[in-house]
Length: 232
Ligand SMILES: [Mg+2]
Image 1: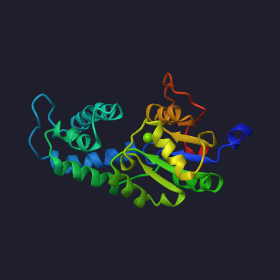
Image 2: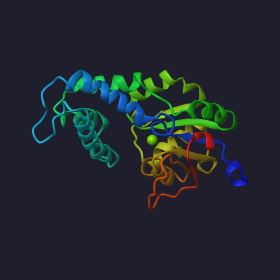
Image 3: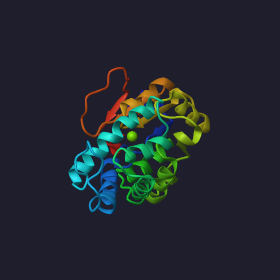
């Protein structure tokens, strides 16, 4: 971030999953464990679904259930307390499986390779706040396990403050904790819809961490694009 305009940032608001935590890998490991414990030797699963004893079929069925529920959550049609159970209910599984999955997510959290060093370096140049959405106790375990808590002046977990991405109010809450103004801050995240959306609503510039070279999302202004945190 070399230009004069970019140097005006004093605060980075940093997303967790998909930005700092390699969520796809973390989730995949947790799903494989849950499959091994609860599905591989169990019944075939609900009618209308493929045989969930088969791992690839199980993984596809989970994502097919999970993704639209997160969209419903962002659109305020569902709360996290419902989402965490409903994604497993759709696979014929109960609260015990939901809890085992969340425990495995926290226990197996994997950072992107550059993330720890990049956060350490950035924390010397900027004031950092973590702004994450998701099941609060799982997010807390991820922070503790990966020891990245130390780099952030504040940790804002959306459901703990009664908000969710892409609410602009979530970033205003983080900025009020930091006593900073929107034009002093940069929101850093992997999701144009969630992170870019709340940045736009809050009047904060958005830095898109685009690891896959995805197409921009119409209507979401992007101030900077980086392929990973070390490029920031
Ligand atoms: Mg994310």
